Amino acid sequence: MPKAKPKTPKATATTPTPEPVQIVRQATMDVAADVVTVSVSSETPVLVCRHWNGRYQPVMEILDHTPGSIDTTYIRDGLTIRDGHGGDIAGIVRPVQIADGKLCGPIEWSASERAAVLRADSIARIRRSVSVEALSTWPDNVKQEGSTDDGKPIIRVMRWTPTAAAIISGEPADPTVGVFRELEHTDPETTQQAAEVAATEKETHTMPENDNTTIIQRTRVDEIRELREFAKEIGATDEVLREAIREKWSIERFADAAIASKGTAKPLNQNASPNLDLSDKEVKRYSVLSAIDSLITGRTDTFEREVSAEIARQLGKAPAGLYIPDKVLISRVVSSGGTGASLISTDLLTGSFVDLLRAKMVATALGVQVVGGLRGDIDIPKQTSGSTGYWVARDGSATESTPAFTQIRATPHTVGGRVLVGRSMLKQSSMDAEALITNDITMQLRVALDSALINGTGANGQPKGLLLADDLNAGTITTPGTVTWANINTFWSVIEADLVDASTSKWLMHPTVAGYFAGTFVNTGTAVPFLTMGPTPTMCGFPAVISTQLATDLLLFGVWQNLSLLLWGALDINLDTSSASASGSVYVTGLMDADVIVKRGQAFAYNGNVLA
Image 1 (tube, rainbow, N blue to C red):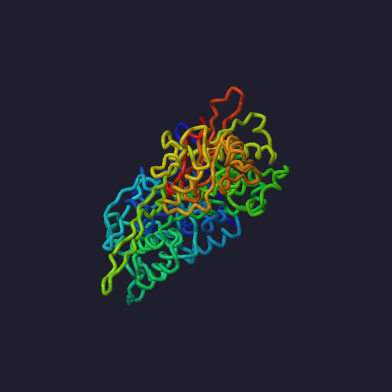
Image 2 (image 1 turned 90 degrees about the vertical axis):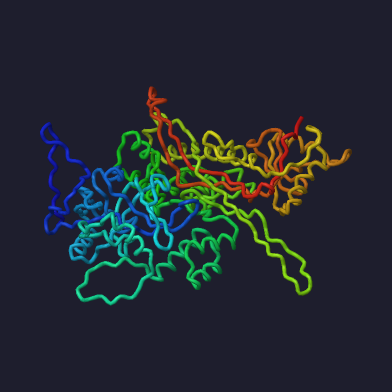
């Protein structure tokens, strides 16, 4: 039977409330013999892959444990202990202490049967491995302290937020922390030495009997696992991966070879998105209105808050307000009682919010690449020149040439959709009421993202849209308002002249421009218009998309796969409770991070003088 929790005395004028996180200098902890103590983090360097000094690379990461470096937002009332990452809550570390460069404390166990098993195994020293779950703002608030012998940067994170810890069955990234390891001192002065040891390949040692020394080592298996994981991140081919394993390449050399061989973007997983594996019952339990209420009241103990905290852990970024999982958004946007459900395919309903946005955007009809689930800044390799072929004289040799690459940097820009929710709406509990809110936010985000793709100004927080690309082609229109058939054909011909295959190109035009082309004929006296209307309008043999997102005098043509809309993270809702406070209403804002990348401007042609 679990031990009863001691009652906490009420705060009075003479009995101050104890600090939720205690800073302890001495290496002792006054606890009963049957109490399990645990450390969850230390200043031991851990090998991770991060974007640092302009590229994605392996670094030795140190979490700084001076009091000002640890954000205690999520541990003010104790640090949650889970049964594995993403598992059920097994207990809570309370009080949380910072002692000897470690975050530690005694565990108060849950009353569940599983927690009893974990507690017994921990007391018996069978389960000792623990892994911390934390948020940090890479590359902000970090500094480099040196490098290992093989060139890996040693990075100290000066501001980070522990959110939870997990009792795990495998080997931890930091072997100096875990159950009953709270007092094993980590000396910051030995950081450089520990980093170098952790980054070396495992050697064979003959250990004396009863030697309990922990040796921090990496095996060849670890290196291969690291290469495979990194290959998934950068989209490397199996051929390059096999050669890297066979020749024992470093990650740095492997990354360079993978980019050179492929010449395409780094991690662009179209279906990746933080989407907790919520059951149908949990999706029904989740309430968007309850999530909004928790933001108004400041409650942190709700189911919706717990879900948001887990998404934040996956993303490595705290929300401005509260994250909503994809499964919930999709189920609310397509109201269960409405007829709209028949318009959305089954695979979309089980997909991601990015899929839902993509299904409704004009960009999708054009063929723009919409990519979700990104984390951190993204470097996309772009080939700027190719190798050149030469004729070779008898007994001569070919002149050497090398293709050139550059990097396109994509960084998050925040876009928002704002909805006014009235006092009476906040008191509702129906799925249709929640669908009304999420539908409005989704619609506003879709319109804003579609517009940014074309018209983004690059100022006031906006990304640069297609029209600001440096290397766009121009279609010829001699006289505005008097467009000829020869003018129309210059759009595809200038793209082909730049060695771009225009066979999959599409037009984009405003309805006013479409009306003009539908009434303009190829030859005088014939009934063949420039633009043939129908289920799929076409002009000059290429499909046309008609949208008010384009200016009324502009015509765009191109291979739209060369334009990408990148989306980071999950939908983040935030509140404005003051602007409409007199009526008891609130403004709910849905925030997403996005950027626009033009991979090759020569694949597009435009003209802004169509109409007189």
